[in-house]
Image 1 (tube, rainbow, N blue to C red):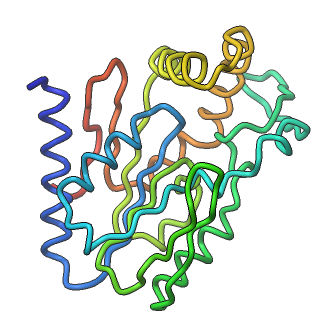
Image 2: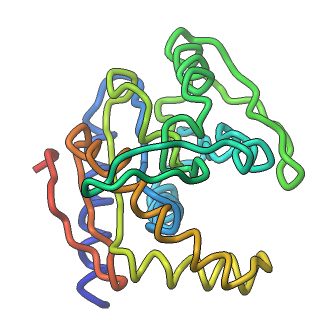
Length: 221
């Protein structure tokens, strides 16, 4: 077993123990940029949980449709230079944060919710009485931390993100490689300006660059 897998398994074991020790319902968020390894971590976590005990919300459905975002540009300063570029999912304006927080409040108040239907996934009812609700996706990074009991932030360096986006978006989704390369620079700048500073609001911070698993912060210890 690689050191990265050992570190991941150790963190997951701590989270499972945290859940077991708790005598109340728990809301967990797993945030970070696209291609950071959030989904992989989430899948490994839920393997250790009883399906009867948890709800799972993939928050990609709370991202504003790209057909709208491609016509929306933002201006911002970076290293003393003004930039103007399309709003990517690394900016809070790309997310329906208020709607996600509304759904979280509903679950907190004992009200079942229906997940948002997509072309690839049917809507399903989430049971508000379940002990654990896991929120996974970029949108969770921008919600108020008061709504969750445990926050996990995962990120990578630029090279790792670009490689993973290449493997996923070009090979699987058919996106043009030149477009991907051109968009990555501004995407990363927006990440550094608007998303990465929020890591201070998270209990666990993980650097997943080069498929390693470096735990930079762990308040469960």
